[in-house]
Amino acid sequence: MKATIRTQGQQLTVSEGDILTVNRYPNTEAGAVVEISDVLAAGAGESFKVGTPRLEGAIVSVKILENKRGKKVIVFKKKKRKGMERKRGHRQELSVIKVEAIKV
Image (tube, rainbow, N blue to C red; front, top):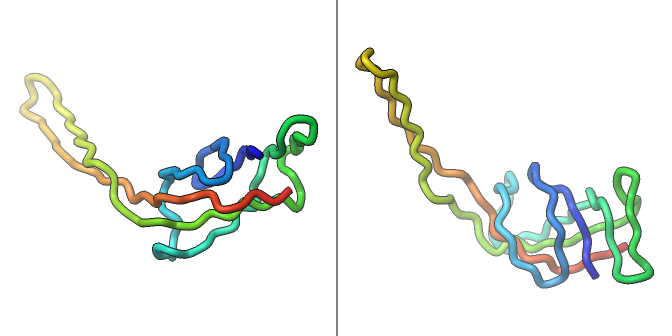
């Protein structure tokens, strides 16, 4: 069974057992179970359902495997002939999740 979910500003198509990296869930630790109720479509074969905009009563349970930080992204700005240079770095907060169950 597959499901299309909306979580942390992204739309993802998942199936049971998938391991994904998404933006960090606030106030959670590794081992926590999060239920995502924003399911846009779910099912398999003939029983596939599409929500308008989401399916009522459908829930996807995910387990947080770890919270980590992504690779460093360097933002470098320069204006030619002005002597202006700015260098800043950023590391995104991420959660690695595993899809446990899809309930339609």
